[in-house]
Image 1 (tube, rainbow, N blue to C red):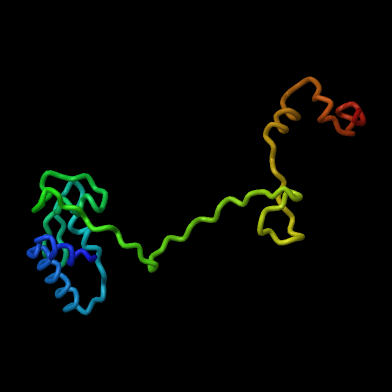
Image 2 (cartoon, rainbow, N blue to C red):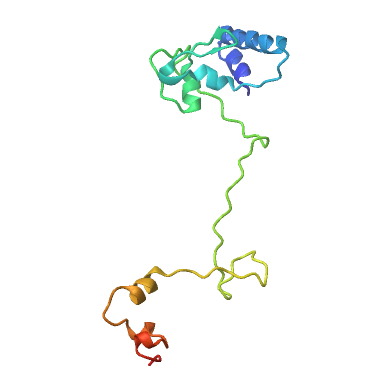
Length: 155
């Protein structure tokens, strides 16, 4: 259900007429722009009425609820039990999901979907780094290499 259809079905013929007039003005300019009328009817910061195409639109309480804005005192309503229509999910502006972090498989540390033969970056272990490189008089035997600085070959 579109915004204009809901307004006509809920007794807001005057507001639907304002939207129709704004659309006529947009078409008279030769523009093919689209507008989310729920955003316009929800108002601006602090519930301030918004003006589009020279027409000031009232702030509707149901539009503020639908758009997730706080309901202000100047928001009008015709029925205490008004419920906004559900948001229609279209495929036109579908959000692309971010790729999941590739989980390491149990086979050889390769990521799923990684082409064979492509080198994988080594994982950095901060614990091993701290154990081997913290300032000690002599590093633990698990870190000793064959350098003369550490006293020769590994034990």
